[in-house]
Length: 285
Ligand code: PAF
Image (cartoon, rainbow, N blue to C red; front, side, top):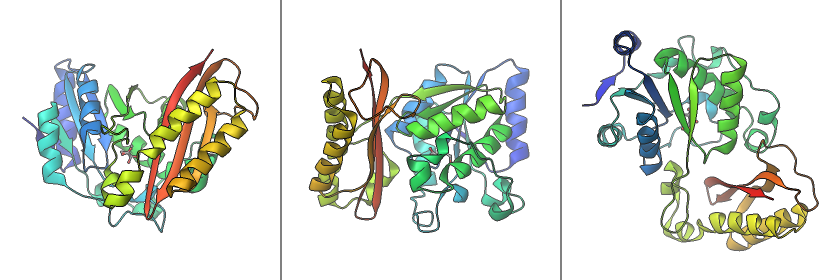
């Protein structure tokens, strides 16, 4: 039976009680408006923990001034029902005041260097500082033994791995597979912003990622692979922020044919007012 907490002391008491009993605590941080992708993260953590906490917090510090913080879908009642069904034990719903006692503007900020300068870090300045800032706080609040993040947010996962290692946060990280609609579109709370015409076009991102992987494996130069992907997406009606192939650690993979190794193709593109991201990891070799 899911228990909802809005008070930090009460949440801490519950988690401390579980730990006194020797139970392992798992955690799934979210911004709510939960879908099957989030539920699969709860199920993943459940397999590695005795109790599962999920948080729902739409984090103001990770949205840019012209982004969708105000209109981000908030569906707490439906979220609680879904979490209960997925086997979650506790729902942590902090207020902005609880998360940022000195106010979001005056919050101690955490900045992961290097990997946050590229891709979404370059296109959404400050975004990953906000993510790192809130995830560190959530880890302090919940004190989980294990936590899960989705592979769909590939760069976010890399940032959080760095954060946990660099700050020696005692949590094991799990990566959940991207859950897709039948037509390949990666599940995202932002998909509901799409009008019917845009929704019909959106799966082209996944098809483009597959084409990028296939072309890279066939030995095409990566610069040509990226150019073809950008042209394809623009032709379908997207405004493309990036369509790139990187090494799995997000470092530059060069412009020529890929040498054997682990790679990831990543796309961020807009349809109207909706920005979608997706990626596809693959090996060559
Ligand atoms: O991936 C998300 O939903 C958010 O970025 C996270 C990790 C919950 C931090 O607000």
